[in-house]
Image (cartoon, rainbow, N blue to C red; front, top):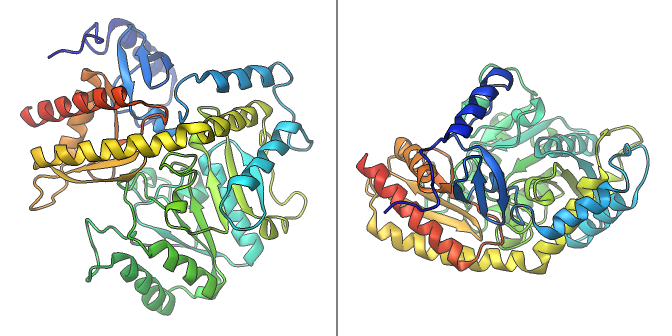
Length: 440
């Protein structure tokens, strides 16, 4: 059965022409998967320049939290832009103060927080690292294999979801030691509790043989690991990490750039585990597409920063802050609960699909943060990377935009406003794409 919304052979003539123009003037370093050339979008639907309609289950890499062109966000951007487009962070304005107040109200730190505004996730991570060093006076860090934290030289030192990001850029920031992220589906350690095993490895191997714990400024971790495979850690692991940090005077830093702002059915992914960080980095879904990032930290830590210790020309941009405030209104106004509801529905349907396809090794996630790992067979668990890539390609031709992660995991991260009809349409297109990829 063909998709009536696909009107031309993909990519269409207008798309091919624009891609050719792009190839002459734009960096080839962007990791593009298939030739989608966007014209416009509304909600979870997008159209290319040739008039073809697609379901967007990538959401600009989990950025378009409220959907494309949400009217409340667009109105907030318009209102702010008509007042002024920029004033440097050397000065004050209402939108920036309001956003700091809002984050203090909603972040689950258990005490008062302060925020540093920037433009992106990698900048938010850089700020978190600098704050941890500044406050503790220590220089070392612990990161996790499979993590993705950005591409600037500090955050890149932690990024290890694949070596592509690091290749050709060594040396990055020194002082980062990586340990395994606990993955119950692909255990690296003996025993049933992979979380406890990782904590034991850090405490009794790394801290005894290689890295003095009293030299570690911070442990940087994604509460749910994103680019590494959409992995959910076992219960008790983040709690144990919190206890370990407290014991050694180490800052616990949560990278919620991709998992925060309602995506998992809670405002922040760490809330599923009842664990509070010392510092948290945010971006992506915070501005519904506008470039904004935040470092949020306990006030007693951030207020130690001296004047000029860290700054940012565009930080707290009024238009971006207005978009973030409107996004939070919409997410707290029902989209977060919708993400939980629709995510539970999709997880159930995907696990039913798993029973029909031996190549679906595991379905996991929370809210609209869902990973479906493809394997050669469930018995052997061998990652099926080529199959995962083929499903992306077939998905594009069938009218659904998807991304993968890890070695062979398809991720479903649509806008948080999807309804049941959209979820059902996506499931049909996904299964059709999987069948076609298996037959290829």
